[in-house]
Length: 204
Ligand SMILES: Cc1cc2nc3c(=O)[nH]c(=O)nc-3n(C[C@H](O)[C@H](O)[C@H](O)COP(=O)(O)O)c2cc1C
Image (tube, rainbow, N blue to C red; front, side):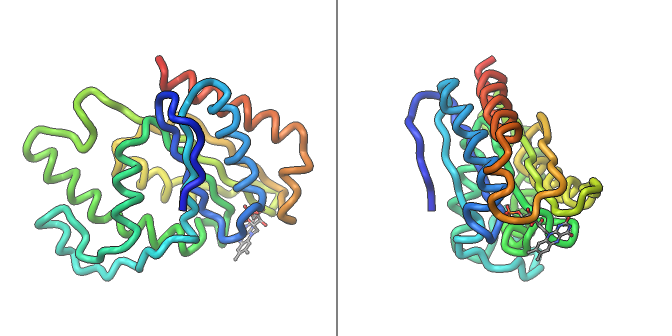
């Protein structure tokens, strides 16, 4: 499920949320990670639509244990999110939110929120002491007018569950066909620059 780069330093984890692989959000994510890679970061991509992640069943048993009772690819991605120094969540807009496969992953983090609350009760954080992680949201929409507020709240809640500090966002409107981002030299350049800045930010 992963495309890995070299193991040079801090880990930047890309979560690819589109069900259309190789489309606009994938392209921007790839270029962001390319820019980060050039700045010396280790990069990795996980495509959420290719995973086996069941929908949350709302049992709330995680509130007592901090663990989800459903065992599938959720646990692997969750672990990786806690290991990452930065996370790039790249998504298309589907009905003004993330695709349902990505939403299924996000919903399962009810257990992460529960784990975080339990850790807080014990005076510890989910991440190793003193470590923080930065979050970058990348979203593309076909509509020319920006209406990203629902999606932003959803991804923000995911970042909060993992104690990830929102760092920046790259919100692009007016992209419909899968190759439109790839055809825009300006977008590709901006994506690479963003990736380089992100790698520099986590090295500080
Ligand atoms: C199921 C579905 C729902 C969509 N809903 C919206 C929407 O609410 N607003 C919008 O601007 N574009 C919408 N789009 C268009 C996509 O956001 C757009 O084509 C985007 O570039 C896809 O990104 P991708 O190539 O990374 O998958 C939708 C596309 C699909 C397939």
